[in-house]
Length: 344
Ligand code: DAH
Image (spheres, rainbow, N blue to C red):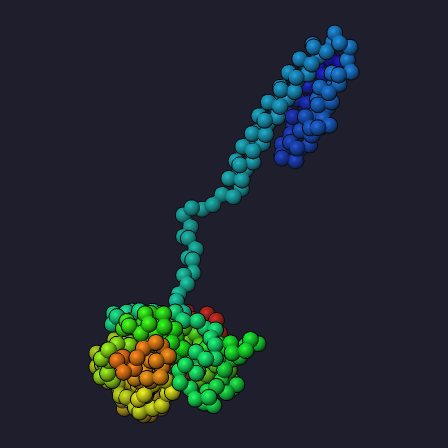
C-alpha cells in the first residue's frame, strides 16, 4: 500500500507539470484530490488496514495529500500568472489613442422652460406647489365654479377613469383648491404659489393640440390683492422671459374661476409687433389666461372673500417654447426624436 501511495505521488506530480489551463487544473484536482480522487481513496482506506500498519501509512498518506495540495496551489498560481501575461500581450492597447467622447444628455426643452419659470417666479416669492394629476371631478370643475353643464365637462375634453368621479386633470387650476386648503391654514394665511405639471385632454392629436401638455398655474391670495398686482406681476414676468422692453396687453375674457378674467398677450418678440407668421400677423402672442380669483373659489379654498382676494394665471410652457423657437408642431415634444431634442 505504501508503495502504491508513492506511485500515485509521482504520477500526480508528473501530471501536474504539464497542466496548463484552468480546465486541466480542475481535471487534475478531481482525479487526485477530489472526493473520489486517488489520494482521497487511499486516505480513506486506512480503516481497512491491519492495525499495526495504520499509523505509518496514515502519516505518509497525509504528507502526500499536503504535498499535492501545495503543489496544486503553486501550479494554479503559475497558470494564472501565465494567463495574465498572455492577456496583457494579446490585448495590448495603445494608450496614446485619443479617447472616445461620451454623449452628454441634455434637458428636454419643456424642462428648460419650466426651470426658467421656477427661477423667475421664485424670485418673485412664488413657491412651487405640486398638485396631483389624477383628480376628482369636483376639484377639477365644481369647486372651480364650473356650472353643471359647462362644455368643458364634456367627454370630448376629459379623460375619465373607470372609477366614478376620478379623472385626469384637464388643467392645473384644481391645484388652486389644494394649495389654498393645504397652505392657507383655514383661510388665515396669504399664499403665493405656482403649480406646474402635466394636464390631459381627450382630444384629437394634431400639430396644434396634444392629449398631454404642461401648464404652470399661478395663485396669489392676500388681504389687499388687486388687479394692479396681477398686471404688474405678469408684466414683470414677461420682461424676464422676453426682455426688458417686452410689452404686454390684457384682453377681457371669461373663465368660470376668475372674475374678471383676462387673456394676456405679449408683443410679438419675433417681428416686434409688425406682424409675422408666428403672431398670425396680429403683432401679439397669447401667453396666459388670468384673472381675479372668483369669490366662490376663494370660499372653496377656505377663505372669506369679504376679507381676502387673489389673482391667478395659467400658462402653457410648450406653447411658449414653440413660439420662442419657431416650432410648428407640438407633437415633437413627446416624440422622443433625438434630432429634435438635440437642438436644445
Ligand atoms: N385653467 C385654464 C385653462 O386650462 C387656464 C387659466 C386661465 C388658469 C385663467 C388660470 C386663470 O388660473 O386665472 O385653460
